[in-house]
Image 1 (cartoon, rainbow, N blue to C red):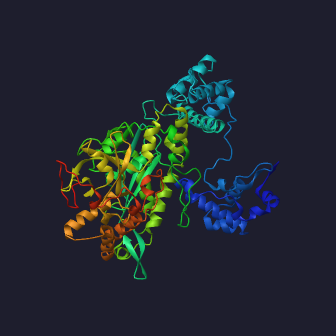
Image 2: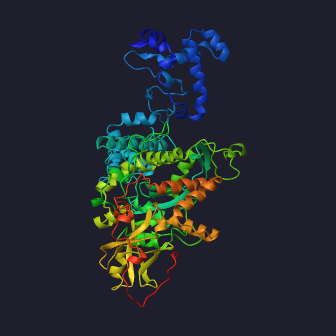
Image 3: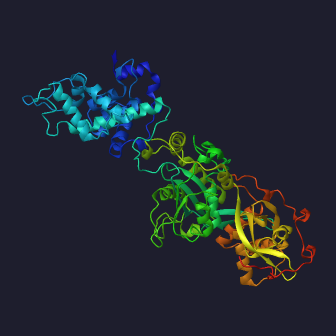
Amino acid sequence: MYINWRERLNQHPYLWQLSNWPLIPFNEIPAKKRRGYLRNQTIVSHVLSGKTFSAIATEYNLSEGSIHKIMSRCLAGDDTDDPPLSKALIPHFRRSNYNRKSPLPSLTNSIGAQGAFSALLDRVPGLRRHLDEHILADVTDQAWGQNIKANVFHSTLLAFLEQNDWPHDCYPYTEVLRGYESCRLYLNKRRHELELDIISKHDREIRVLDRVKSDPTAYSEIQIDHHCVDTPSSVLLEFEGRIQAQRVDRISLLVARDVATTVNLSYVFILNSKPNQYEILICIDRIYQPWKRIEFRTPGFKYIPGAGYPSENLFCLESAPAIGRVLLDNALENTANSVRSHITSADYLGATFSAGIPKLPKDRNWIEFAFKILCEGSHMFKSTSGTGPADPTRESVKNSKKPPIISLTALEEFIEMSLANENAKPRATLKHLTPLTDLEYLLSSAYIPRLPINNAQALVSSTRRARARIHFNENGQPYINFCYRKYRGKSLYKICLNQKYADFEFDENDIRWVTVLDSNYSSVGKAYAPKSWQSHPHSTRTRKFIHDLRKKLKADIKNNLTWYFNYLLEHKELPGRAREIVRVYREFTNQSYQFTPTVSSYHQDTDISSDDDWLDDSEFPEWSSEYFGEDDEDASI
C-alpha cells in the first residue's frame, strides 16, 4: 500500500533524526550534483526539525510544493519497500527503472524515444534472451561466441528484427542511428553484470577477460628500479645521557614489480642515496624469500584484508615461478657483472637481462606507477621535498631548520604498509580483481615455467659466490684478496697446492669471513679478514666507506669498525651522517629484514677465537712456494 512521507515518519519515528539516515560518501557523488545534494539535505533537515514550509520556501526561493516533492522522493512509496532516503537527495535520482507506457515511436506518430530501447526488448519476443546469449558466449569464451563490439552487437539486433518481420516504420528505424547508442550502453551494462555474476559464482577463479594473448603472463617480465623517497625523517639518538632528535636525509627504496599483474614482488629499504650492486641482488632474491608481517608501532597503520606479497603463501620453493625477463635502467649498479651474472646464470635466476639502450632510458611504466602511488602518500607530510624546487608542497624554510615530526621508523612502516596494501586493492585494468588474486589464479591455471629447487634454494640464501686468485706472502702463507682486505685460513692451505684460484661464498651482510670451496664446490673451511675487522658484522658497503675514509684521513686504526662508528657520532650534525649512523647500527646489531632468508652458517659462529680454522701468522707451517704476494693489510678488491 502506498504511504506518503508523513505516514512513513509516523511508522518509523527514528527517521525523524537525519543522523539515522544512511550516509553517502561525498566523494562518490558526481561533482556537478554535490551542490544540489547539499541544498536538498539542508532542506530535509529543516523539515525534520519542525521548521515551516513557508519559511523554508522563502529562504531557498522555492515553492512549498517543491519541498513537499523532495520529502516524497525520500520517504514516500509502498509500505513494504525500503525508502531511498539519502539517495533521493541527489539531483535527478531515478527511484526505479523507467517503464515506457506509451507506444513505440513510428514514422506517423513521433512521440519521443525515451525508454524505447527497453520497451523494444520487452515487446519483441525472444530479443532480450537472444542478445544476452551473444554477450554470455563472449564473456565465457565459448568456441561459438564472437568477440563482440558495439557495431557488431548493433548488427545482431537489426538482424534479429529483420528475421522477426519487425515493421520498418517503427522504432528503431525511426532514428538516424537506429538505436545504436542505446544498444552500446546495454552491451556494456550487461557485460559487466554477467562478469560479476561469473566471478561470484566461481569464487573469482576466472581469467582476466580482456587480457590480450600477446601480453606477458605472470613473472614473464618484472621491472626493478629505485626511488629516493620524497620525505626526510628524524631519529632519536642518545648522547651522553641526553636524547636528541636528528634529521635523517632522504632514504632510497628499491622495488620489484610484475608487469602482467602489477604485483609488488619485493622491496629493499636503502639508508643511502642510491643502491649498490648487492642491494639489487637482495631485491631480486627477496622475490622468493618468505615475507613476514610486522607489528606496526605507528598508530593507525594496519594491513587491509588480503594485503601481502606473493612469497607469503602463493608458492613454495618446490613450485617457485621462473622469471623470464628482468628490466632495469642503465645505472652502474644495475649493469655490474655480479648483477648481470646473477640474473642470467643457470644456477640462479636463469632470466634475460635487459638494461635498455645506453644513454636512452626507456619508461618502465608499471614500476613508475608504484612510485607515483607512494609519492601521493608521502607528499602529505609537511617534511616532504615535493616533486621539485618549485613544488608548493615542498618543506618550508622554517620547518627545514628543525628535525621532521615523522620518524624513520614511521616512514619505513608507511612504505611497508602502502606496498603491501596496494597488492590487495582491486584494479580496473584487472577487471576489478586485486593483483594478488589475479596472480594466484594465473599461478594455478596458466602455464608458467618453474625454477629448479636447487636454484630456488640458492636464491633464498643470503650467500654470494665469488672467485679470487690465491697469493702467498713472503713466508709462503696463502691468502686471497676480497673487498680491500686479505683473508687467511687453513682452508686456503688445503687447496693452494692443487689450484691457483679459490672459489668462495660470503654473506653480503657479514663479510668477516668467507667459506672456501674446493673444485667440486664443497666447503673446505673458512678464511678470515684481519682481526681488526672482526668485532661486528658488516657489509661490503661499510667496508668500502671505511677504506675510502681511512685513505682520505690517513688514519692508523686498530679497530676499524668501532673507529668508524665513533667518527660518525662526532660528525652527527649532518643529515647524511645521522642516516649512516642508523644504517651502521642496524648492520652491527644484525637486525632482520621483512623478507627472511634461510639460516646461513655465517651467523652460527660468532666467536672466532674458538674456531680451529682461525690461524695467526705464526701458526702456518714453514714451507716455500714460487708465488709470493704483498704482506700489507690493505689489498686490491
